[in-house]
Image 1 (cartoon, rainbow, N blue to C red):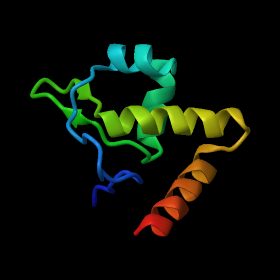
Image 2: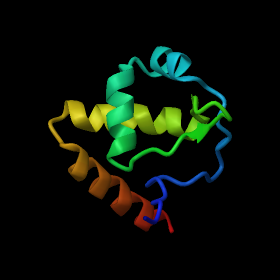
Image 3: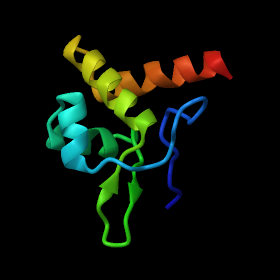
Image 4: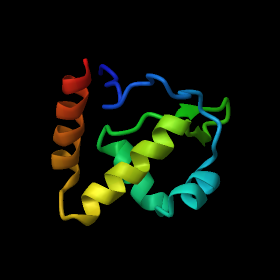
Amino acid sequence: MEKKKPVVSSSNHDGIGKYTMLVTTMLTGVEAHRIRRFEEAGLLKPARTETGRRLYSDDEIELVREVARLESEGINLPGVKAILEMRRGERD
């Protein structure tokens, strides 16, 4: 099974995974179970430590905030993914 890239790329930002799930929830105000759902939907692909702990980058922190904002407006995750892919296409 081919692994899909997240829908946001690291351009002009820090794409290095450095924040644990706990820190990510504190920085974004988004609950861990929702962040895991974002990952399952293919919106995020955090780095992993050797023991499997997720590490989120600055880019992913911004993305979590944006996904949560769009979701709060009533857009489901497939719709959020489509919006983010369209935005990415406009920047390329």
